[in-house]
Length: 254
Ligand code: NAI
Image (tube, rainbow, N blue to C red; front, side, top):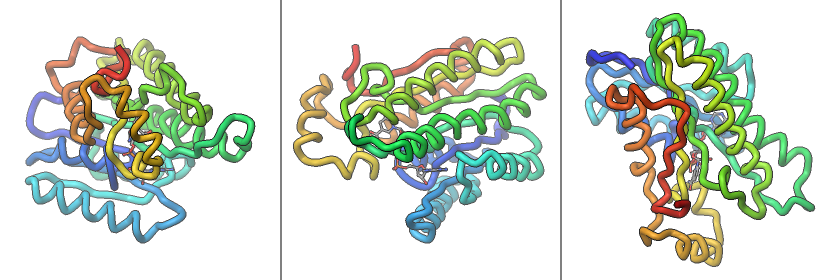
């Protein structure tokens, strides 16, 4: 990460939830935030969410620009990063946050359910890491932070596709950390537990109650709890940390 006040931050899935909180965490004069989002089921609604994130970032004294980009598509990701490099000329921080769920028990899970989740959550991070990584390696500096999940470590019934994608993200993190270390680029993951966003709002009251019972700190996490950990990993203070997974789960996994 650059030590002066100007930096370029890229966040995937910044329109809502944790991604929006991450954008807001970085909102500061001199910081340019490029974020993307994608929702084929409700493109206009998602665009409105993205515009709200932009407005909030600007309200906090920052600068943000958003674009609808499917991170699962290599061509779309390439075009997105070409635009960022054309406009900003460098990338200091990449946060791979975009993610989806298609929950079903294994015996009911279809190939399409599996592919959809792996394509966005894991392949999307792979594409973005390659394009941003190229810029960072050339710069000899950069921070990549991947949003994993506690379930990628402990497993979760009904989420074989999601859990596999998040376990994969941890493997991607550790390997990228080893490959990029000598080029001044650190790669770490944050593993959130149960965070209040649209993703968890769809869970039944029964599942929510069961989840809450497993949280030693006794409350659900907020998107800002995750964003603070991301900001730390992107900071100068975290310069000697790479290949690690920081849990932000209220102690769900100890
Ligand atoms: P959310 O559902 O509120 O937001 C998802 C974001 O990803 C949106 O901005 C959406 O536009 C974007 N997105 C979805 N598909 C995309 C694609 N193909 N290309 C680009 N962007 C895409 O989700 P939430 O809860 O904010 O989750 C963010 C990340 O945190 C995800 O990776 C999720 O797996 C992870 N996470 C969330 C937890 C939770 O309890 N909410 C717990 C652990 C991990």
